[in-house]
Amino acid sequence: MHDARNQGSSAAVGAFTQIMGSRHVLTSQRATAPYTTGDRFGAGEVLAVLRPGSLVDMWRALQVCVDHDLIVITQGANTGLTGGSGPGDQDYDRDIVILSTLRIDGIHLVNDAREAICLAGATLFSLEEKLAAHGREPHSVIGSTSIGATVVGGIANNSGGSQIRKGPAYTEQAIFARVDEQGQVQLVNHLGIDLGSDPTHVLDRLQRGEWEAADVTPPPPDSTGTDYADHVRQMADTPARFNADPTFLHEASGNAGKLMVFAVRTRTFPLEKDKATFYIGTDRPADLEALRRAFLAADGPLPISGEYMSSHAFDLAVTYGKDTYVSLKHAGSATLVRMFALKGWANGVFAKLPGVGPSVADAISQKLFALVPEKLPKRLVEYRDRFDHHLLVVVSGSERAATEQLLTEFFAGPEHEGGFFECDADEAKSATLIRFGVASAASRYFVMHRAEASAMVTFDVALRRDDEDWLEVLPEEIADQLLESVYFGHFFCHVLHQDHVAKKGVDPVALKKAMTALLESRGAAVPAEHNYGRLYPAPEAMVEHFRELDPLNMFNAGVGETSAKKGWA
Image 1 (spheres, rainbow, N blue to C red):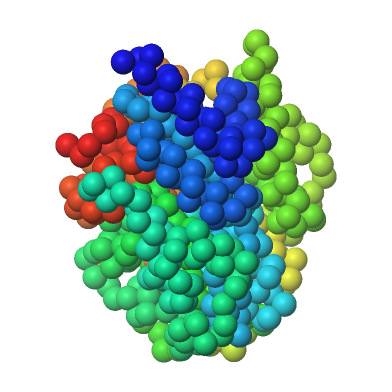
Image 2: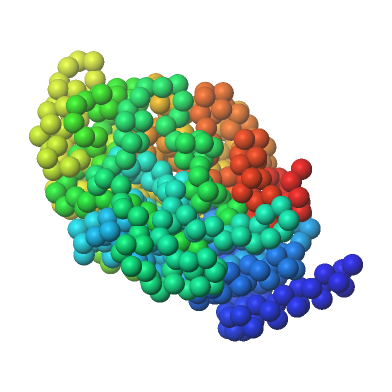
């Protein structure tokens, strides 16, 4: 049986090579490591990593995988936030193939750039650049854009981001492949573009952008937001957005890799060039919650974003996210994307050297950037020293006066304590980048303290919209197991990222289970926007949803499960 499986795998590799050439069929451990190891979580062995250069080659490679009974993981940027971008340590009963989409990065703008057709490997950064020339912007504008994440990946995971008015990444228009109960590969075209019926012809036309304007259905009404803006205002006893919310599950949207998505059609939004940024500080979490409710109840448009971080998170970002902060501020997103790629490659190379370890590039970057002088804006430092809790609110320029009035009146009375100021251009950029740097700070802290730590224990959690006690206070028996903790997130949506580093000797699996129980006892939902990957057990409703998308468990087997099986249990 083992010999037969090896023969079948060898035949599959030969077929892949015929389709896309040996250069793009990677089989050695060294060559596949950057694809099989996530930046945070996930690592495992694969039969091969495929790097097709066309949608047709993707389709043909999928046919080979089905014919040889292989698990397929369609991979974009391999951010590894929950391990769903690659294999895990589960007990797979079949060989795994990773299909990397990054060479297929085309973007076609339609309907006067009010919508974009993004192919499988198109990145948010590329979409942002392409739309800027048309005075438009994508759903996400900072965060994943800076680490090379793909548009399709964001939609597959209902990524939320900081945009209060827009809500989770979502579309009902996509073209994808699924494998039915009989093992037949089906191409489903719900793009709203007439491309014919033959799969290879359809996909070839799609990649080349070969269609007439009349073949494309009209766009939705133009606006700076979506219906989510009304949804998030409601003080309900449920979270505003989370991965198991059926409101945002539709075919490609929220599919978690259980379909092979070739392209998505997404809305774009008018680019707001005139913005005002307010920096707010307080020592009392209750005052931030009262301020959140005041903004949500106010007349007029919602803020563009409202990002929270603690003063401790600020300090960690300055110390352990300095390379991210400095690179983005002085070199831009394109440079940071290249830096992430170089760091991943270097870590893969050094991991093979005895006694070196898998994170040497991070350690080198940490030490080098510690030598780089970087003066933070004075008022940001003053607020960091003065207040424990910080909120960064960005509003449309037309809402500048109304926002200043709301904040002045809020802090004028004796019932609320704190302060605020409107940022100048340098303060606004610096504050935004510090908040972004927080997202990588705990990971870097873990790398630099491996001798004292057992693992990272991370959460992206959606709190109830009406939860007044939003800031977690851990019981002593749990806090004592942690070396470091950092709290930050998308405050108006009540979606928080809570990154912890467990002490040496602590069982991170048992600890995460206990911490998850505490969150769920408060009516919170996990995960909120990073999907289940290989860290979170999926609830029965999500298991059923995944089963409907992928009845034979061909795609990304093991997502939301503790073990991978050929069929659904």
